[in-house]
Image (tube, rainbow over all chains, first blue to last red; front, side, top):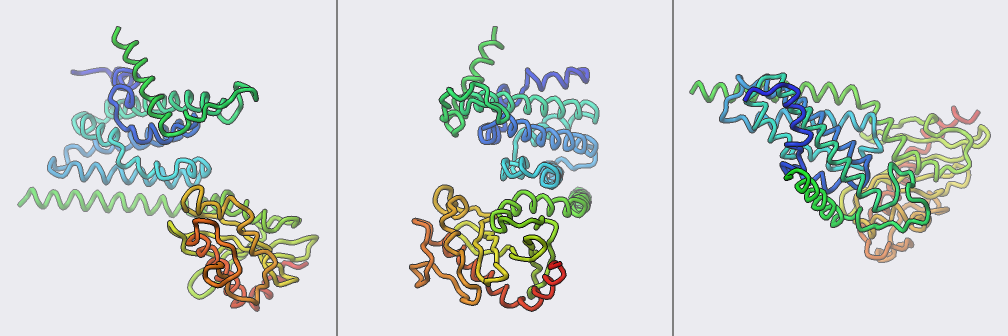
Length: 197
Length: 198
């Protein structure tokens, strides 16, 4: 059971990478990955919340009565989400405008609550930090990967810079909602193909 | 019983603690957030309204109290002479409030036009109030003294956006509000503007 800190971190990158392996937190995955930039921004905001809430939950795990643990988790998570929301408004306002409602909705992202319940409440601070950080980075990478595919195919550009040149006819379907489902499905399929060998 | 007390205690302390954190973060970021909103939401509308002005309306701004609300006014100058004044008012739209930046030409006492700043109207229908410049352009050159603006179905002179009467009405309310505010504060505004006309 006792895994090293590196193992706790690394599992978030492949073995338990949130959208693909755990298939959790799909709402932001599908909604904000129109561009790589949005994906990374959303991922980093979620990572911040994950790490902070994991640290606090594991620190308070002997104090919190088990009967009301979910309520306590939600208070902790909601606090950090609001902090992120305010910080994004203060420093990265254009990104905040693009992500819009999905920033406050990190509160109900089941990855964050899931890690608090399944990991941080049962482990000490250091492994919990590593776990939150690993899952967060994994989530960010997944969002960036989906965003990369969708932006590249859907608009022919990356970070707003044209890659395929003016002759490319954008396949706009990919930046629409149905394209997100298909993109996620295909990437899941490829990951399972590679992973099951 | 002990269980109950500890539950109440933990929740209370936790809520108070997070409330404290949020209050301090909110306080320390509020100034920055206001600046960011100015820069990214209001500045484009103001630039559009006060075209050709040679100063930066973002810097030449002042606040005046109208009743219990405080309004920011942005001053547009051409070669040191005040020509226009822009400020924001709100009307109720289909999905919450619509912000309208309105410009007043100081010489002719007419509206210079406007620009929708914040809105959450139906995309493609009501949102045209922001994206279709023809709609707000209808307010251009209407005299401030005239008072109320209404959409045509309500007996006014403004063409409503097709399928978005409520949105159009909201914008009209905001514009009406703007001229009312201007008329109410005219003396104070003129006093303030003297300081800028140098």
